[in-house]
Length: 303
Ligand code: PMP
Image (cartoon, rainbow, N blue to C red; front, side, top):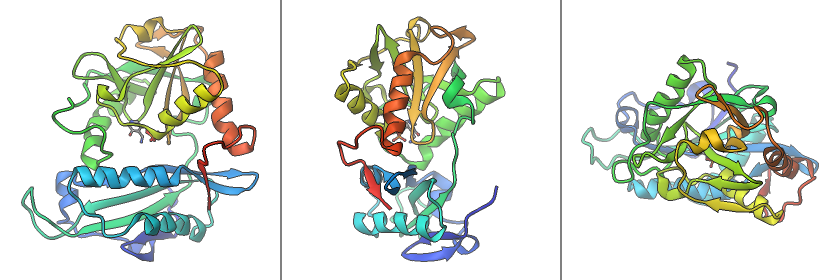
């Protein structure tokens, strides 16, 4: 991988190779970090960061859950996000703002200093070049999502992604494009790093946030776009077998965007190719960036 030149780190812009942390940083040992993933798209009005402020607000919320007082405020962080993209001369980019417990104590409850950084790099479709078009083959993971009273799924914290790694690595090892996890209730939860939507009779069904999943910003955007355009959305508990019965199925997230799923556990979903509702949502979502979908909610934040 070719790394970009610049990173924002604790208030300064540094060269990639100089943006380092101590190996005894708390976050490295105990997963005590919080992060965001955000995309910047090229639009007819220039590059725009999709829901930058909402993403960074979620970073502060994640930090709050873990009692991490972030040393820079939201405006500074938003400005840092814009600056790293500009300095690296990127237009279509993935942004990674993050904060972690640094060096300053080894106890679990240590109040270490908090470090912050923003990195950015070019990122194409997360689940493969063809995935957006042809869909992926997914499997239900043998790993469950953590229960709500164990680790809060609503925080986007580094440690949560041990669960995501088990799910994603198992799926890839078995030859699938991505894994889908059940919640501790046995009902559907989400993908390793994506939320899920099922389509029945033209309506979207998605698992409620109570199913121990990340309150995804793409999920929220799709619910809003669907309702704005007369597509019914139902947030409800969904059992595993509905994956085999639905007409269409897709995953969504900042990295995965809207990735159709053509089979689950080797069983074909619907017609085995992206269906009309999935296509319509892709059109509405990607239309935000080429001007076909009006930005009615102020989601495009200029670079
Ligand atoms: N669930 C998990 C576990 C994720 O990591 C992500 C990616 N951030 C999502 C859902 C989708 O969230 P978003 O649309 O905000 O990227």
